[in-house]
Length: 271
Picture 1: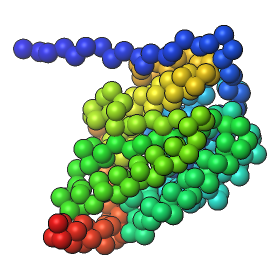
Picture 2 (picture 1 turned 90 degrees about the horizontal axis):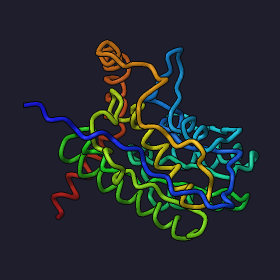
Picture 3 (picture 1 turned 30 degrees about the horizontal axis):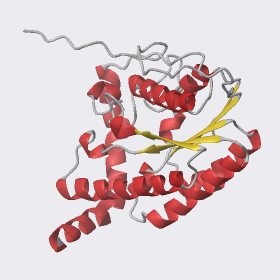
């Protein structure tokens, strides 16, 4: 017997107040997710949630200095000046997972950098959106010791985000990725299971749009959940990614994450 799934409904957008603010310039800072990886375009390149969110807000300018592999410190020192120069009304800071995947992970330094980024964006009048990360070990399967170590690091990353957001209760919103409906469903993830698929990017854009609407911004064009305009990903694309990108990435990360695995095992023995 075939069980039909109920259709996915778009995230409801609160009605805009009569004096809803307009986002003319949107800034998105961070790593490969705001670059758009996982949401390829037919002619090449990436789209991703920044473009979808810009269109939903009706913004006339998108400033997106995000780059693949970025860490929180890089956002502070390299991307933040670009965003500040544009004086955006809204800014999304989507970064942190690359920090957790490095052997020199420093949650105190990460929190300091995040606080500096948010304070600077708030100082130019931007409403800032941050993310709390999901349990990525439910999406990307890992060996037990590494899974436990990564979970612990994500908890520390989220604690830093919570602390920074608490310091700006009126001008910062937080999107909890683990609570997005369908966040752990396979269709929400690209072939690498590290980046959102087109559907996943649409979920992110809709979530950010909902936060901005709740903060009093106009969202004239709600984000649709039906995939459209992107490139269809086939089995051949998946196989090519595994050979060209997947295996080399695992080799590179294994060198850096070796100490993380050892530390996770030591911590487990101590407990």
